[in-house]
Image 1: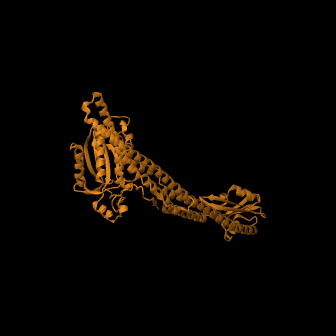
Image 2 (image 1 turned 30 degrees about the vertical axis):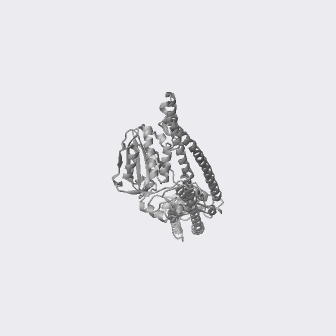
Image 3 (image 1 turned 135 degrees about the vertical axis):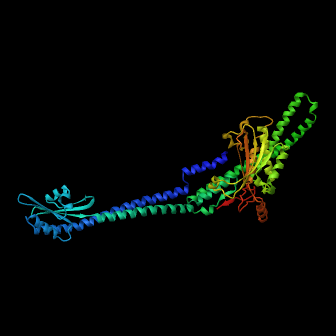
Length: 533
């Protein structure tokens, strides 16, 4: 598996562990709503409970005082049965009980033994016996009740009533369930609304991300529309700084590219002269001493390397300056690759192809694809004793790629060059396409080694056509490396249609639309900055 192919899996793993920004915003809104709803619910439940119970206690307290006066006026030191009759005649009473001191004995009477004197807390009975009225909430047989006691001053006894609070308790439970349900619904609704609304909140960041991606792809003319954010005190400085950063980056890269281009141009004339002189000397090499012949041979090989370096630097500088254009042609991909590989290798390398590509005519830049194949084959010749096979496959996006946002109709063609060399270590695969990188041979100066720009040019040629490159292990598990270039499947009729409708200025920077993959081109030196809004 290549580093390029494993990157989406790593990204999916990171997304699985850490939610995205929109999800975090939705979660934050939902949590804030949940905390607010819980606070409101607890406050509502507490206030409601206190209000209902206080109202109940206030109303029954007045009633108990009235009933106590009635009992005190109706009974003196009467027998128990007379007290029972008095208690049963009380209007709107709860569960009344009375304690009356008698001659040598205490009369205790209750209408309901479940809520009689024994169910009344000792503290309340002692308080009433001491001459003070009292009220207390307790639980009797699993039922919440309120017990009220009033001293009977004339008889020296105590009068109690017990009122059940189960109706209030049932109402509070119903209210609590309603509040829990309302809290859950409001939390879910707030999360959904937060996720929906975050699209508009994150739209500027999305645009900045798109602009950053365009810059990363080499479109240094990309700018954010400052007028759209001029009234936003938070985003306006960010947009200004971003545009300034990209402008500075573009200026620096353009300056470096012009320097490399100017140097390369200046070197071409003396190189041509020196190569011509070396050729003249080579024609008379047999007349030179043996030591001079060896020196001339070394000089010729180094000059060939130097000339190739200058030519590659010139081409690299054109990529950096954006002064490159695609020349798309209709190509029968399989026979054309077979012919190209045969010409490059004198027919010594076998080409295998996917049967689904037979007869398929695609749009591509033949010159650039030829350069890619030539550099791959040349790289295999220099570092792996030559290529062992070239493979042409059609690639359909798999479930993992589709889950990463790849269009399921976005088909590509992969051309791979295999060898039986030492292979490319995992830690080298990500940078082997960097400029002046020659892997383990980076410090060597053998005459058969390149200058380290061939694979960098391969990456640039592929990127220009909307493709990508990487190196991986061989499919058959054998020793060696497999260098792959992946290009989009572009239909010729679509390309011709877009070219026919494009203006002369826009045709050079063609972007294919519809169900075909876009080709991203660098800007020409005289192109105005492209504004992303």
